[in-house]
Amino acid sequence: MKTKEYEIIFTKEDVQPFVQLIGDQNLIYQSPEGAKDDGSESVPLPPTMPMMAYKWVETPLELQQPMIHRKQKCIQHQRMYMDEIYRAIVEVTNPFQRQNLTFIKQTLYLYNNDGQLCFEGVSDLILGGLT
Image (cartoon, rainbow, N blue to C red; front, side, top):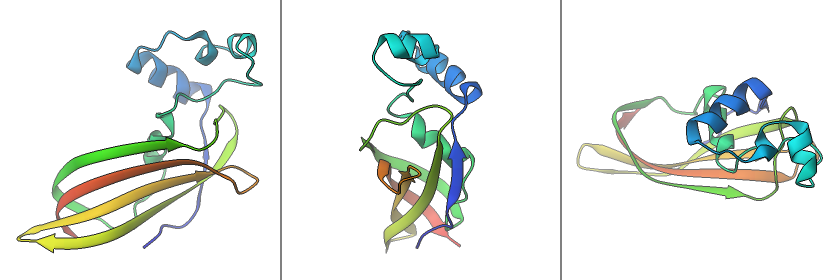
């Protein structure tokens, strides 16, 4: 089951607090000048930053408590940049039940304007149920 497609733009106002939160002092995330000194065209996103897209997308199912985040994997297929437009889709697969719990795999896909996959964020979740 997939969501509709969402348009996502990571702005400076999104990137700066994230970088401060994770404590990354790398100058490539601080300014366009710092990024250019590193050989980047513009300010890149930290590799796990795309997971923040969940702030702007709705998941295809309403997840019920309790919710346990078993494991997560972030795969960066292409470098992503601040102020570029990306398309986000969330897909839920492999649902199964054991006792009173539901197990699912939820994957966030982010594509650039050329339709190329840039990021996959895979989360294995254990839930109290689905609606």
